[in-house]
Image 1 (tube, one colour):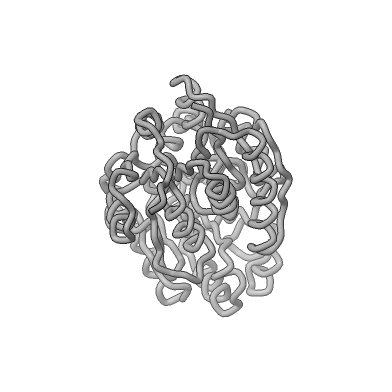
Image 2 (spheres, rainbow, N blue to C red):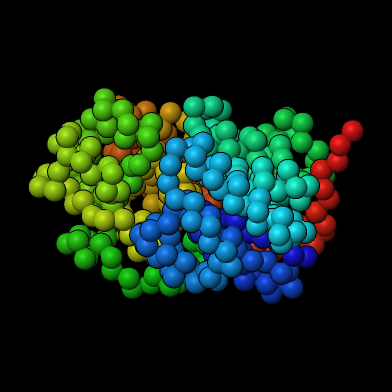
Length: 362
C-alpha cells in the first residue's frame, strides 16, 4: 500500500510520532506531506526533532491566513500532489484546516481517505474544528476512532459500521512512549519552580483570547492562584494578557516562550494542576496523571471529564477558581480510558491491512 500521511500543525505531529515507525515496519509505503500550516521552528521543527519523526517527503509552505485562505491554499497544493503521486489512500489526522483540505482534495480525485481520530464531536458549530471534523468524516472511507462515543456519533450520522475501527487514542500512545525520555528532565527548575508547586497554563483559543471579557476573567482567576502560574504563551497572546494585568512583572506569574513537546510533557507531568483550552493538553494531562481544568464552552474530549481527570468550566472567574481548587485537591486516581495504550499504532496498521474500500455511489 502506498499511503500519503498529511500533517500541518502541532497536534498532527504528536499523533504521527508513534504511527510512522509502525506503518513502515508493517511494509506500508507511507510518506509524510507537511502543509506548513504551522511553519516556524517553535510550532513545527522542534516537534519533528523531539518526536524523531521522519523528514516530510513534501513541504507545501501553505502558511497562515484566514480559515478559507489556509484551507483553500492547502487544498490546491495537495490536489496537485495527489494527482501526481496517485497514492492508494490518503491519511488525515485530527481536525485542523490541513485535515479538511486533504480530505477534500483526495475525495475529489477518488482517492480513499483514512481519518485518524474520527468521530469526536463538540456539538458547537462555531468551532472551525467541528466543521472540519464533520466534513472530513463524511468524506472518509475508513474512520479510525479514539473512543467508543466516537463510534456512536458516526453511526448516528449514518456512517456504515464497516468503515469504523476503534483503534484508541494515538496521542495517548505518544505520551506513553515518550515518558521514559523525560525521566530526570527538570524543566520547571529552569524557571525557578519545583514539581507539584506550580499551575501550568495554556490558553490560545480565539473563543477566549479574542473576547476581552472572557480573557479578563481568566487572567483574574489565574492571578488569584494559590500557587505560582507558569504560562508558555504565544507571542500574539502576550500583549492581550498584559492588557488585563498579566504582564512579565505580574506577581506569581511566569510567562515564557512556547516550548517543545518533550519539555511540555515534563511540565505537565510535574505540575500541581493544569488550566487549558487545548484539546490535546486535556488528553495528555489525563495520561501523565495531572488534574486539568478546561476553560471552554464545551469539549469534544468529554471522556477526560467522565473519568475524573478534567473539569470543564466557562471563562468566568467564579467558575475557574473552585475548579482549580478541586483539581489541586485531586487524589489523581482516575482510570485511563479504554485503548489509550501503546498498541494504537498497531491497531491502525491492522485496520489498514484489512483493506480500504473506496466510498461508493448509488
